[in-house]
Structures are given as structure tokens and as C-alpha cells.
Image 1 (cartoon, rainbow, N blue to C red):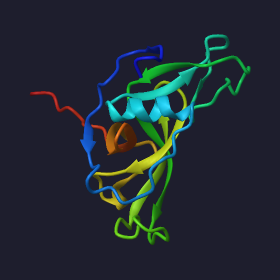
Image 2 (image 1 turned 90 degrees about the vertical axis):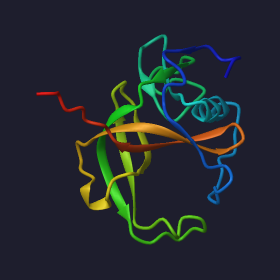
Image 3 (image 1 turned 60 degrees about the horizontal axis):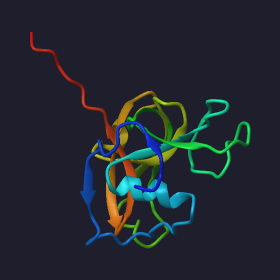
Amino acid sequence: MASENIRGRQGTLEVIDVTDTWVKPVPELDPVSATYFRAACDGTLLIQRCPSCGATQHYPRLVCSTCAATPEWEAASGRGTVYTFTVVQQAGMPGFDKDAPYVVALVDLDEGPRMMGNITDCPVDEVRIGQRVQAYQLRIADGIGLPQWRPEAVSVPNI
């Protein structure tokens, strides 16, 4: 990540190290995705923003999906809203079978792009479209992090 020019606050998300217990597939890094997954390992959720047209995007790509310019990396807040979701009742892949039921959601980040991920720390029947969520990162392998989502903490004012 040190070789990349990344704008925004980095390393602000909680990181939970599960490298010793992770049995699910691990992403294969390529020249574009490596920056994203390595930043996640350090508590940073990255998106791409185009310096030419201002469009944001996720998943990482070599070019802006709007104007084909070269996008730049930007640290996102990790806050967003559930756009839609599904509850997986039975998982067919090894490593996922003990997790069911679990929620897979599309989350609209406050910065603009939409991301897919699991919602945790919430009963599956309490997840709602429009629900505010906060990202955290799982360190799943050496140098590889994976974002997850949980309900955003609501602060209650002292009355």
C-alpha cells in the first residue's frame, strides 16, 4: 500500500484476525485487486474515484467505467445503506456450510459506489433494506483482508 497514492483516512476500520481459522476461499491477487485487499488487511476500505469525471467505482478496475480514464484510490468511510439483500439458507461450497443461514447484501457506500458483502452481528430476520451499516475487515490471510458489514452503532444522547 505504501507504493500507492491513496487519498483519505486510512486504517480507521476494525480489523479482526481470523487467519488461523479461515477455511473459505482466499482471493487471488492481481495487479489491480492487490492494493484493495492489502489495504483491507490494514483496516482501510478502498474505492476508486476518477480524477477526470469524478465517478466512483467498486470493484477495482484499470479504467474508469464511465470515461475510461485511470482511476485513483480513495479510502472510504466504511459507512453505507443496505440496498438489497438475500438470506442464504444452505450453502453449497465447502467452508460456507456451517455459516447458514447468513446474509449477503449490496451496500450503497456513502461515497457512492455499491459493494457486496456479508452482514454479520445481526439476526438474519432483522436485516432491512435501508438499514445503516458499518464495515469492518477480516484479516483472512497474510496481507489479505475482506470487508464485512454490521449494523451501524446508534449513539443515544444523554437526556
